Image (cartoon, rainbow, N blue to C red):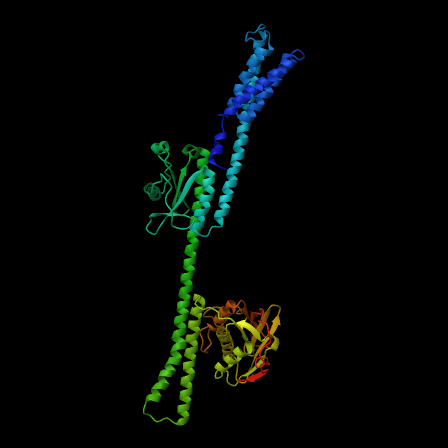
Length: 524
């Protein structure tokens, strides 16, 4: 729907209607001349009434009135004796003329009213459809740029006008907002000063009498429930069209919809900022808590042992060996903590790029077990990797980190002389790798939560850790296109499973030195 369509509603009529009124009356007269010797004059009147109805239906009230008068004249001149003269021999025909003109005018008026009401109903239906389309698009807008693009697309076609969205900055100064952001300029003849005044006054300047006469733009304050959110500038091609009551109400309704959409996006941004701030505060507190506890403890131990070693007090060889081992163990714990913190920062900042290559899964497992030889002391490790799925495409360094975190986690929560199982199996287009233990298992309801940052299955545990290991595992596995989850073993304990895509290995057979099964059982 556009503004020009409203011109057709009313009684002004179309210029072609007068021509068609003449053509219709002439045609009716020609037909009546052929029938006047066979039919009574009262029957021939119906031909002219039919012309009046058709002209009024198609072209409006004024062409209908014109056709009514013309029909009476034609009837008088061509069908009432004496023929071809406006004089009347029988005065009774004067009553006929009056009745005919009255009936024709009434029919023309009623028909034109019905036509106008039908046109108004059509235009209102189009207006409702246009508002629905605008509201539907605005309901899905997530940014100010999308709102600017939507209102430009809809309002320019609805009002045949140039439109511009102005939104305030932090200081309350209006800025032009387009689909590309804060770019572009005001339409011609628009004034930023008047728009700013409209925003400051929180009013609509449809313009005082001089503005209406000069054809200046419309400045519509976008009033939302909380406050005015901006100004909509409308520069119509024909200002008088936009000043029509129907179109003016339509413009104000569109402005209200746009204001609601802007306010909704504003509060969505506020909510997102609040969530980010709360999450940042939570992570900061968790990090400080972790550092204050899990870094201070090994640091205190290291400082105490190094002080004892640096003193001149004699130390027995056995005590010296024990102190050195403790010093190394605490240093390794600190190194693991710092490594986890750095890995998490890199993974979530997108600073790590995968170096995926076709490699043996057994080699990564062996490397991880070698790194954890001390934490996994007195643990029995059983590995079962079928040879037909041992070659996969992955980043060896990152996948080694996954195994280290899972195995270290299993070592922390299992007693001495317990068993840890590592096995893999093919499942469609993926390989499922599982690390199982016979410890206390994952607390019920924590199967997903333990993969969040700074979350531990037992928050009150005295074991060293900040709750980053499993979160790092999930980030690495997700980067490889797989997923990881935790579940409870049927015989007790925890079972961590992650999947990796099988992919298409390169052609050719494996070298003989690599085509060997990994030992089924290892003891660390």
